[in-house]
Structure formats: C-alpha cells, structure tokens
Image (cartoon, rainbow, N blue to C red; front, side, top):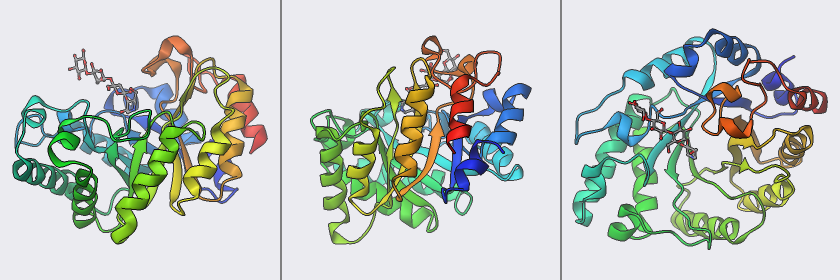
Length: 296
Ligand SMILES: OC[C@H]1CNC[C@@H](O)[C@@H]1O[C@@H]1O[C@H](CO)[C@@H](O[C@@H]2O[C@H](CO)[C@@H](O[C@@H]3O[C@H](CO)[C@@H](O)[C@H](O)[C@H]3O)[C@H](O)[C@H]2O)[C@H](O)[C@H]1O
C-alpha cells in the first residue's frame, strides 16, 4: 500500500503533496501522485498574483488545470492561499483605505473561493500573518485593517464556500514556541464571537534534526480543539528519523487530520539543494519513504 492508504488506515484523511501544471506535466511525478498521494495543494496557481494580477481581472488557467486533474483522479484539494502578504500584486499592497481594502479582499475571495466552491477539502484563508514573537507582523492587511482583517477574510471565505474547512496557516510552528502560543491566542480571539476558523496549518519546513519539537507543537495547536494539519512538510537531508518523528507526532495527535509534503521529488522542490523530500531527483523513493511506510 502507498503513503496515503497506509496513513488513512490510522483514521487520517489523506497524505498530500504540493502540485501544479508544471509538476502534473511530468510522467514520473504523476505516477507517484496517483500511487501514493490522496491530496494536492496548488503550489502557486491559486495565489493572488496568479489569479487576480490586475484588479477584477481573473486568471484561472493553471488553477483550473490542477483542480480538474485532482478531481478526475479522486484527490482531495487544499486551496492555497487567499490572503497572504507575499506573491501579492502591487495594486493590492498599495491600498491605504480600509473600506477599499475590505471590499477588495471580499471581491477576491468571492471570485476565487466561489469558483471552486464544493470542490475543495479546505482553504488556507490567511497565510503567514504572524511574526516570530507570536504577534501579527506588518503587512498591508494588518497596517490598514488591524487584526480584524483575519475575521474579514474568514467571513468572506465562509460566504463563498459553505463546505470547505477554513484554515489559518503559518511556518515555524515547529515546537511549543512563542509563535505557536501567539497562534493559539489569535484563533481564540477570532473564534470568540462564533467559529470562523476550522483548522490550523503548520507548514513544517524543517532543518536536519529539526523534528524534535513536532509533538509539542501539534499538541499545543490541538489544544484549541480545532483541526490541525501539517501542510508543507520538507526536511533538509530527509532522514528516516526526522520523517518518522513527524509522522508519529501526527499519529499521536487525534486532531491532526493530514500531512502534505511540499512536493514529491527533490527535482521540483523549492529547496532542492537540501534534498528534503521522500523521492530523489530521479523519482526514486528514499530510505525515509520506506521507513515511513514501515512506521504506518
Ligand atoms: O517558500 C516556500 C513556501 C512557504 N510557504 C508558503 C508557500 O506558498 C511557499 O511556496 C513557495 O512559494 C514561492 C514564492 O514565495 C514559490 O516560488 C515562486 O514560484 C513561481 C512560480 O514558479 C516563480 O514565478 C515564476 O518565475 C519565473 C522566473 O522567475 C517566471 O518566468 C515565471 O513567469 C514565474 O511564474 C517565482 O519566481 C518563485 O519565487 C515556490 O514555487 C513555492 O514552493
């Protein structure tokens, strides 16, 4: 059995991977996605700079391709991402009026999330809004709208797609650190007036030997009672021990519903120099892959 079916045998939803037209166009990659993965996340095609490069003119060419491929191959989809300060067009980051920015966010989300309503498992509604101290960091969204931009985004996402799980996603949520505590506080405040956020995504772009804090991080995030997902896993050096440590942390955390690696093969990884994934640059499974399968 492959990754996702072995993982699902423990009551988990799916094991996914980042993907996009550039990687579903590679036959070796597609063969592995079909055999071992139960979900995909668009690596770039659903981001603001790709979907709405100019105000109110939308481009869904690549994202439609990814969604159609996933749907016709029975893969769940994690939408990524609606509101993020990076890969953001200049026409958005230059807005300084709160009413304008609010309607721009609402229009973007109703068009993008509305288009895929009913087809996605979840959305990363807000991505990377926290600083390492656990407070919201400076961005056009926070500077113009304050913390309320998070609620504005989640309400718009809920209105556009009543079925998708709505996640807040961030990196360096890899141990029970100030950022994890900040995230727990933020979701508590946002959900205090009624549940807007359904889940917390921890990206887990790890260094070699960096998996030791995974259990503490997942337990702390799960203490909110929300779903938790590992959303962009890759680990420098891809050691068997690091990968099985992360997998076991998820197995031991009932709210941890899925693991997504940020790609399949080192050949297409954003950090290929670190050899961080479970398949090498010749699309051959590494020792870590066998160790994970054995562990599951
Ligand atoms: O940075 C890693 C993670 C961290 N968490 C959020 C998550 O979304 C992020 O993913 C990475 O996010 C990165 C940008 O922030 C992506 O990198 C961008 O990926 C884009 C699509 O391939 C690149 O854009 C292409 O660039 C080419 C040459 O510069 C141009 O010819 C193409 O037209 C242009 O699309 C950008 O330069 C490149 O910066 C990576 O593929 C993607 O893996």
